[in-house]
Image (cartoon, rainbow over all chains, first blue to last red; front, top):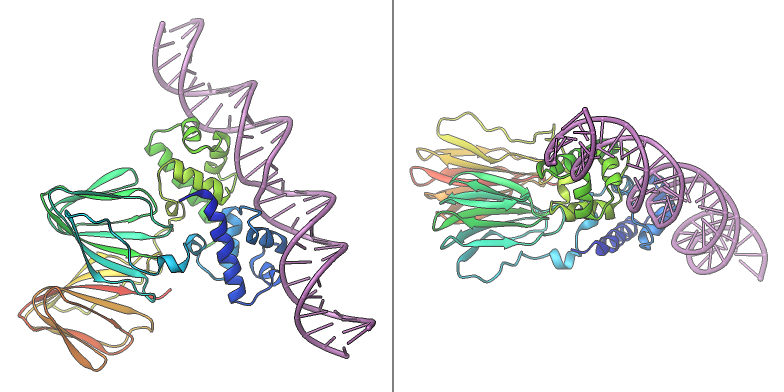
Amino acid sequence: MKESIFKSEIANHLKAERKRKKLSLDATAKLTGVSKAMLGQIEREESSPTIATLWKIASGLNTSFSAFFANEPALQSGERVFPEDERMKVNTIFPFQQDTRIEVFEITLLDHHQQMSSPHDIGIVEHVHVIHGKMKVYFDQQWHVLEAGERIRFYSDQSHGYEAISETAVFHNIVSYPK
Amino acid sequence: MKESIFKSEIANHLKAERKRKKLSLDATAKLTGVSKAMLGQIEREESSPTIATLWKIASGLNTSFSAFFANEPALQSGERVFPEDERMKVNTIFPFQQDTRIEVFEITLLDHHQQMSSPHDIGIVEHVHVIHGKMKVYFDQQWHVLEAGERIRFYSDQSHGYEAISETAVFHNIVSYPK
DNA sequence: AATTATTGTGCGTTATAGCGCACATTTAAT
DNA sequence: ATTAAATGTGCGCTATAACGCACAATAATT
């Protein structure tokens, strides 16, 4: 994810949210405590706001903070795509639904397979619950070893991955998307 | 959530992450492309970084962006309380957290036990995934039979319940609370 | 058509994010 | 003990985030 696309996502989301609520720059300025000049500049991508002001905007508009970093709904609507690999079997337990914004997979790693993944969008949380075998999960620059029955939770907007320590490992993977 | 408290969250997380990696301000400056003076000010809460710089920091440290905003364990622990019953064992897999607004239980029904429940708040969605045995789930005025491995999803703002058909049944219960 | 709000943008000013460099302290090496 | 390297803070400077106000444009009212 490049830095520059941030600005346009923030701009788009702010503009969309403001239009959806049928608010003028002046009205949102009063709601958020951020000057309308600044709001205009952010929408035109002429300014990269500080977290403090972005917080004031999110807070004043009663919208979530992470929503400013989400990709277009068109892209994130569906299910996550997994790489085609014979040694990693993915079974969808609960597909993504707009109301809950979670999806659940049962994943089987064969032959000590390791599966790495590049960062996802901001705010996405992954839950790993080991059903069979022994495995390790990578995030925060560390491998975390998990026995059967154990579980762990992490932000997946970073490099992460899974690897079976026993020959095969089965785990449940709950992915939560913000909104 | 007040604005000031997550400035300290950012400060704490940056400091902790830097210490964990045993990096100096100088070293992190080279990694992230952010001057060490600025990094120092952020750690001392003397400066509120822009989104762009915080991104450079997260990116350069290979850490998650969201982790800088990790909210403290919510006071409002939405955790559901279950009736005391010897024939229904509830094991919490993932406790409720404010960011995801889900909680996950592993529930064991013994001796053909039936457990009914009165309606919860509107918008709450329950997911049932049968691990062992055979059971049925009640909602929408009827019972739904589930074999091991099968799953079902329903709104729990209505009378609902579970019952083991085999002598014992084990299922996972994912509860999603609306934002 | 003329007037009056409303809305977004441009401008000048202030506040502060962010940088490079130097300084004082500590830590390690000689 | 002395030197040398490394680490965090302070200072001056520049870039820009953020503000208030005024202006030009459109939309609504008379």
